[in-house]
Amino acid sequence: MQGQAGALTKQRSYAGRMTMTGFTTGYGRNEIEPKIAPLVLAVQGAGFITFSSCEGHVEDEGHSLPRLPSVGFYAHEDAARPVHERLVSNRPRLNCSWFLCAGFVHHRERGEWVLGWTLKNGGVIEDGDDATFVKRTVEAVWNNDVPLLVEMFSNGQQNRR
Image (tube, rainbow, N blue to C red; front, top):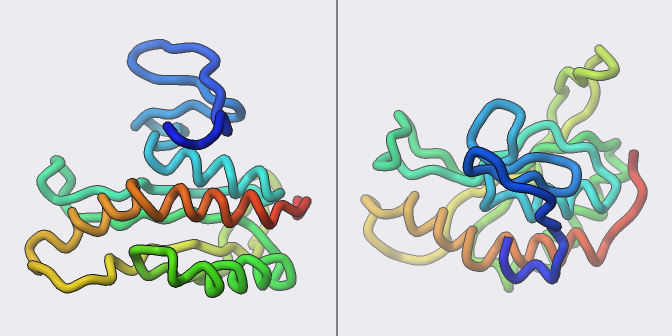
């Protein structure tokens, strides 16, 4: 959340959580994890409705399986194509591989199956110890890739709802 040029605005604090513009950050149900929140806000600011996100977790944080960061959003193919093109053009600046994957997801509000896209992290692009791969990936995302992806979505803002 730091370094996002005020993109997220702290409204109030309670029980260790912050309410941000449009959602609450935290680790509970229906909350956005803090380290992926700037990217979720940027995706929403570009006109997309998000349906899932994960900031990434390493095994030793009490999670049964490591998880790499991701953000899911609804979009027609013609709306997702520019996202993919910007992702490809920004590839040299990113520390990790990122994939834009499509599938049909159930839209909770509309009650129907729609095309959804997930911006998935494929891991850090550097040689290193396999035992620390997830930790190095998650740290690279938090420290480098999230701010660059926020910039990418902010520069390509379009109303896609």
